[in-house]
Length: 249
Image (cartoon, rainbow, N blue to C red; front, side, top):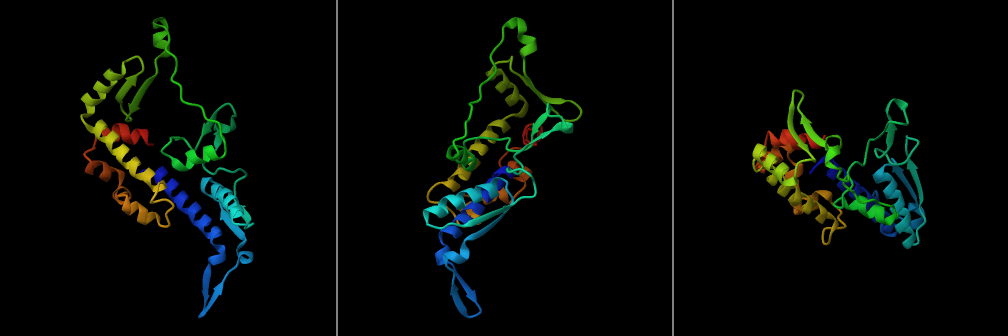
């Protein structure tokens, strides 16, 4: 599991924990010495959230949304040191030049990212499907060719361009790296398949991230380094360094 998956999973636990607390405020019981004290709604209306990134802002949104369904009206305060909401998901201008914007977060938007995909639908955000570049005439072929290259510091260890057919590019990568690309694809599908089950019945909603990760067999991913996990599944250098390491930086 990569760092983004772990972060999104942790965000889910944070949000669910806060939601559970708000929806059960009238049932919260605390021990004061030997005296058992029941806290009522009036005593549990103030909520403080640290950070207005994806976890903090979504927690505030869903606490406000679901608490209303229970007739609770919490006072929610979000503490954020920056002047904007979104945390790492923001745009910066290189050398303060607005003509050179760079996205520094939220670079991956896929349907397997359940939290993000659900939020897009919840907030009615507009999305645009990816459209490949149109093919140009043969006369303009050289100027329109997009080439992918992996540079290791000394030379290009792998190159691929759009002018070649897809089957030829597949042959090239299999000839150079053997079965590693196929093993990687199968491992990715298997790991992502387990991860998305965290948000499906009977695992969701979960109270313990560790418990659900163990039940789904994901602790084998989180308990080892990326290199160890890939090696255990028959994926090693040079494919792991040339392609996987380069594409995940």
